[in-house]
Amino acid sequence: MSGDTAMPEVDVYRLTRSLHLLRLKDRETRFFEGLWEIPEGVTYNSYVLTGSEGAVVFDTWKGKWSGVFLEALRGIVDPRDVKYLVVHHMEPDHSGALRQLVGEADPIVLGHPLTKGMIESFYGLTPRFKPVGDGERVTLGDVDLVFHHTPWLHWPETIMTYVAGEGALLSCDAFGAFGVFNEVWADELGEAGWERYMWYMKKYFANVIGTYHEWVVKNIEKLSSRGVAPSLILPSHGLLLRGSRLQHAIEKYLAWGRGLPEQGKTLLVYTSMYGFVERIVEVVRDYFASKGRRLVVAGFTDGGRVDLSDVISEAYDAESIVFATATYEADVHPLMRHVASVIARKTPGGRKTAVIAIYGWGGRAGRVMEELLRNAGFNVVGVVEFKAGEEGRNRDKIIGLLESL
Ligand code: FEO
Image (tube, rainbow, N blue to C red; front, side):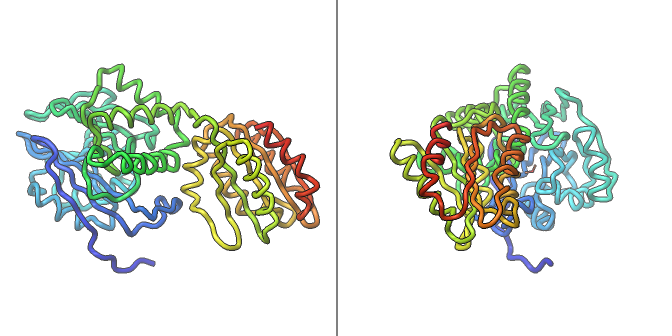
């Protein structure tokens, strides 16, 4: 069901001589992609370039705000003067207002060859469409645009635009972040704000494009080999990057893309039905505290749950992961199966993992977890499984397991 929504907050900023930002602050979406909890909200950034041959719009917003998008656009140009719409990516958080814009402005749509068919099926439209090649340069009067195919950042049809005269790379999902901010540029944040912002950038990376992390490195290296050295990175979510913050973001992107873990970081993920697993969590906490090792704990219990999106972010760069689970109907607790499956899907393989499982009347969860993790490419160092309440007599086994991480 959908209901009336409050008027969202919209920002329009002039960024350079010819580029404007059109930004919608979405504080309504609770589950990005219907999956990821985002209490911090998200922005959709569209860009408008005004040149001698008319205006170019780069991406739009989520479809429910199509009318607001057109209204904001009118603050910069008459939509009838929009000659081109560049579609970097067809996921509807960016292409949602395309139908209304095409209806009002009839622009020539520029995009990846795959984009045309998606527009036809998603929106029932056959706009004037010009596919752009990988590395193709298109001159529109006094504006020089170079298009680069950047597959899997985030879908196969994703492209980026380099606005040569402005040194600006319009990067779409790449270098984007969750969160709603008053600032426009990331360098307006202080150090603490930047650190928090990098958490939101990692959260977007890990949850949304982490599965395709190897393509991050391939695409950055491709752009670099083509001499693309932007002074501005303008993503489709979050704040805009320049100067040292831009360099830092590229470094982090390369590290995440290479799947490099944070040395010494262990994540403990657990499900507990009646508190027995939480007693094991205390054993694990005590062990890590005694060794002075960093442990991040994420629990799903009868009293509360952490956000899965935060767990995915923590798992992404953990050096090792401990899964502690209750048994449910002689199987892994269903919530642990779900959480572990999503972690397995989003986290680079090869990480050391350990499993601790408890049961009331029949143990099998440990073996099932081991198989799930091995099949996902993790290095399972061991499984310890015992009856609920017997963590005292199994303490040495638990400690031995943790020592092998
Ligand atoms: Fe922000 Fe893949 O969409």
